[in-house]
Each structure stands twice: as structure tokens, then as C-alpha cells.
Length: 151
Image (cartoon, rainbow, N blue to C red; front, side, top):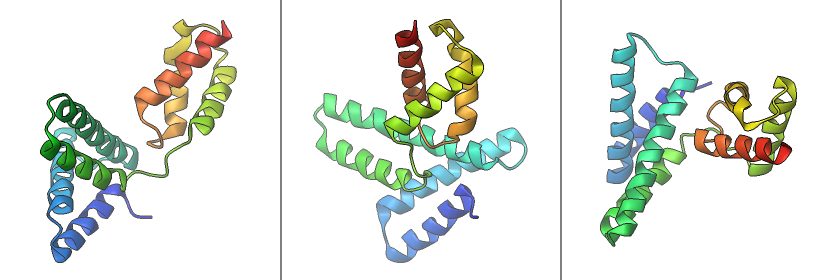
């Protein structure tokens, strides 16, 4: 199975052949971030770390989209949305809200968590199972809601 980095490298070549400037620059930026992370780590990143890096880049684009909306900059808004769409294509199939709730509920039962103070233990357990199929802030929100409604 191809790693996220291999998919990105292949996508860069395809974008260059197709003369797709948005895809080409977006993929180049992510590959650059990946290489920097590998240099900082002193070795290759595992698949989970690669997916997390892509999610981090998506979060940056989401913040840019919100900033562009606030400042009424449609040019920046379109660019950020296009980049975000390109990046999302490299993520694994995302979990639905119901699937995430089911996963979080089983983690709460398995860890014996009862109150929101137990959230860290549950999050650690859930994040190992999610593996890039849902953003951390969404997982956190679902776990917090379930723990608050339980108490």
C-alpha cells in the first residue's frame, strides 16, 4: 500500500504533467513540510505522522478560509478552499459523526471513564484507533460531549 508521501510525490508529477498550478503548489508545500519534519525527526515519518501533517496543513487552510471570509477577500478565500480540497484528497476515508460516537463510546466503556476529567485517558485510546480518519478537535468534542452527558 502506498504511503501518503508516495501519493503526494505521484500527485506532484501528475500535476506538473497536467499543468495544474494549484495542485502543484499545494502538493509541493506539503512535501516540503514533510521533508522538514523528517529532517527534524532524523528519519522517515510513519504513515500516521504523515497523515497528521496533512491534517495540520488542512487546519492552516481552514484558518485562512475563516480569515478571508472575515476580511471579505474572495480571491484568498477561493485559493484557500482549492488548496484545502486538494489536501483532503490525501486523507484516508473520514469517519462519520455516528462512527466516531460509537468508537468514543466503546473507548469510554473500555477505559472506565466516568467524568470529563477522564478525557485524556479516553482521547489517548480513541486517537490510536482513529489514525487520521477524523481531526483531533472533532474527536475531542465528541468525547467531551459523551462524558458530560454521562455524568
